[in-house]
Image (cartoon, rainbow, N blue to C red; front, side, top):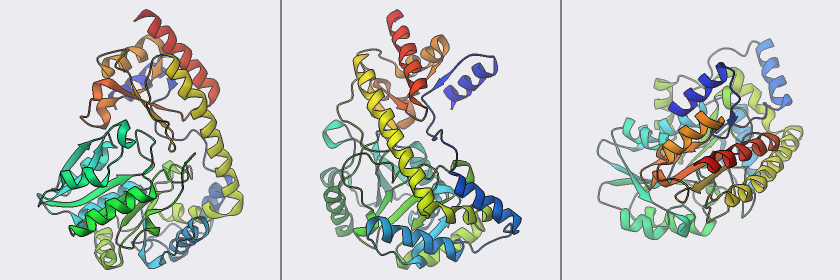
Length: 371
């Protein structure tokens, strides 16, 4: 946030900034969704809805799982939320008691730790690296499990690494967690933005998994603040009760707009954008490697490259700040994502078009030429 605030300040002063730090798609919300949102406002869909969302959207989400993954999901288990952050807050609120631990990978998205803290729990981060595709494994979960462990959280595709958890690995982790009477939580927020490997959903593995998703990344609806979860059947009533108390309901116009997210017209737009993200990855990855950034594994999803920069600097935060100040190139230092060698890593987001990425690479090359 400090780096982003400085980047915006520099822009306000007239500096040119190439943004490779922002985890937000640069594409606008697809027109069919926008039009559905306009229509919702015209039809006065501006009042409270049920806490778990309108029936039509819950059914549409369930239908999406059937169409895309051949997976049957009961609409009664679908909970629409104010962003995936709302879903995560509900999950931690109904699961975690003070002092109970949730295991997660390091590096990982920082807010996942914070939601555990919010519930009074203990986020236990497990160092991971290229050997496991920056993901937890059943073996790592077994080693990290303690008597007060309540849950394990995986993210696939992940932020900041863009790596995936395979179906086999997820099944193995689920067996370990289930055998210890724990709960598995799967963050599928970047689902849809997958460029290699099998695309599947955790909902097809077992019905006792909390599955978290979002309309922000693949669907391009960041500012509409809408997400969802699939909750185990026995947890739905508790989730509903907590949602009533915390949020009252998800944003009503956004819910009606999201009904258009699953139409064939919108899906064609979204798939073309996925290919654009793939092209950006395929451009940026080798260019950064040529400059000395090390990436032992090719990310297969999301829109991030998590690079080892230890051959270029011993302090990734200082490196990122100097790059911003001297060349107007904005990237994210590793300290945002945990305590697993953060000073040796930076994250690049390819959420801007290739012409800007080309300019960003030139600026990094100039910066390195002076370092």
